[in-house]
Amino acid sequence: MTALRIVVLFLLAAIAEIGGAWLIWQTIRESKPWWFAGLGVLALAGYGFVAAFQPDANFGRVLAAYGGIFVAGSLAWGVFVDGFKPTMWDFIGSTICLIGAAIIIAAPAATAPTE
Image 1 (cartoon, rainbow, N blue to C red):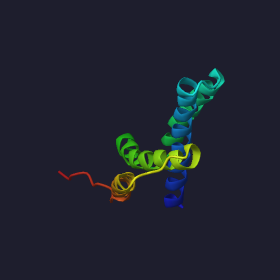
Image 2 (cartoon, helix red, strand yellow; image 1 turned 180 degrees about the vertical axis):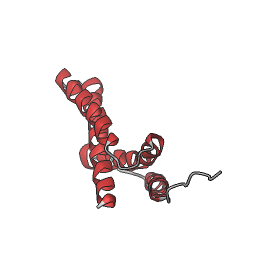
Image 3 (cartoon, rainbow, N blue to C red; image 1 turned 30 degrees about the vertical axis):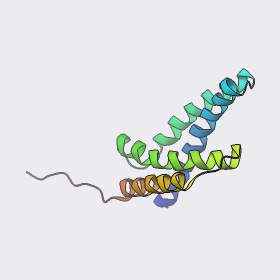
Image 4 (spheres, rainbow, N blue to C red; image 1 turned 135 degrees about the vertical axis):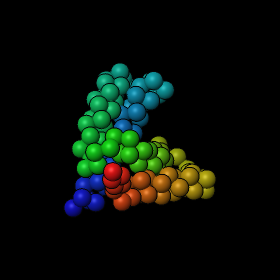
């Protein structure tokens, strides 16, 4: 159940952050209405709350692991929403990021040194 929770929260965080940034991008770069940016700001705020529900209590670890998800998710968003055509280097880079994220999030819990 914990692994499923981690995956779902990372996916929701990615949708909120990438979607929010995309909505703002659309407002500024594609001349969409300003309410797009307002929705983007709300989505970005939602991202912050979603990330806080991760079971790991270490902010830095959660956000570092999420970084790999963000890289791959951003490329996927580009493919499915904007028609972006990734290169081999995009695939290699995002795979490396996802491996790094998996290592960070799946590592055994560190034990405190005993005195």
